Image (cartoon, rainbow, N blue to C red; front, side, top):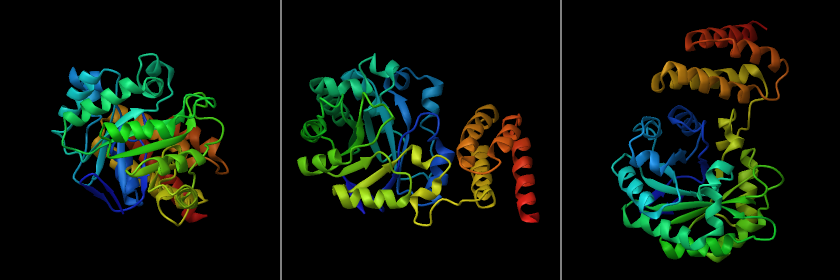
Length: 315
């Protein structure tokens, strides 16, 4: 159990914000498998304030999708504050600020990980968001800009002083992107630097990894991103099924949730992306993947999954 401001989270394994993946259907699936807290896809503060349909669609939720944190990104304190006020009118329990995205088009605009090089602006953004919401505000950032600038402990103290109720540390630098190894030692340094909850992130590929991260660093919870793709079992102890027969029910459940919440075109596109992840490491995955990519609607995809399930049952 973790207390983030006035929000009680009944668990310590969380789903990270991942653009293009952590939509409502996937969040619901991960919750069914044990995720105690889920984060939305990254939401542009400008898109939100200017009412862009694609941005507003990222706020889609459901009564079963709680507690939910919406992650905002931007570089203008005033616009971020306005966006926080808008989000506060939604059925949301937390607001998270992205200060760790390494994508160059985000960083070039002074947002994401770029804010680690501008702590004064970062502090102004946190204060502006906190001033425009009664929801707890969390901040996600990286170890630092590069190996010569591991500034996460100082950045965490700044975030705490500016009003953050918790912080998440991705234990890689901006320069690493998503490559190399996450240095969990930095998470421990952050844990010792602040009094608010600290969530660790980076290189959690199975439930045991998360338990080990908490034991080694003292962090209060763990956030799982890429390790959850095609692997919602990561949030529970039983481990990822090793056979197609065992994975197919989750794929079909995912498809059913997608059918219920997304438009056909987007749903097919998203399910194909997820299907590739579900099939990772399986024998014959390439052939099955080709058949999935040839499906043009959800009915065809559902028929294929049922056919595969029938074939495995017959075998």
